[in-house]
Image (cartoon, rainbow, N blue to C red; front, side, top):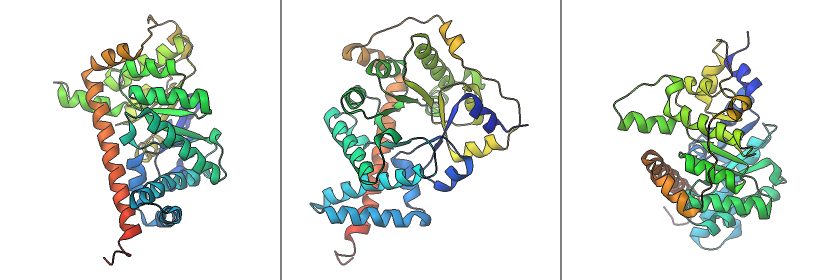
Length: 327
């Protein structure tokens, strides 16, 4: 009998949530996603020091202020990791725009185009890249512009509320990453209930509702469940367009041999009783604000990704300038 991982691949596109090439080689996903936290972890592994050195050399070569050199080295490092990952997968890699730009629409557009230019310099076309943006109002509008005016495909991340999902669909972005595990974390931390059956898991229910809404109303935006805490959540979302899964959980799925049943389907979604809604900026901000979990997890996620971006910059700064400062 096939493993759960192999069965899952019949119903859902499996994406590796990692910057570690070995895990990608082992589990053979179609796509891969990265974020500042994953790149920070990978950049500290001995195996990837050559990429870090190349990024440092690139930042120095372009010159400018210390800050500009570090920023350029950082962007280059993200692209170097992405380029290496693309050698190992047939599909696309997601590369994230700095979370500190989450409320700066123009800043996100500019940084996204810069990343695409760096990929182009490396001989990689934009058809193999998804640019990850925070699902703030500004991020969603940046995604809309990048898709419509620049032909750049976007992956909207840190998505916790139904309002965020509706606004992303209306913006016509390529893909959304609704977070499952972080939603569960919030309910466990803030409620009386500490364990949930997969079908009752608040993160699973959130993604199921979004999937059903998109399919019922014919939105083309891909739903990619993300941030899983256990394999039960993954099994409960079998049939979702895409699922991005960490190496640890990919390993567990590859060793599991139960029969997998698809839980989501377009046919069932189209029969759901859901009303179509439209959200302008005022309505989006109100509806999102009504969801306490989503408000707290979005801001927390932005802060964490921003903190890891700062750590990564600090690491690069040490590499770039400590020797010449005589430290």
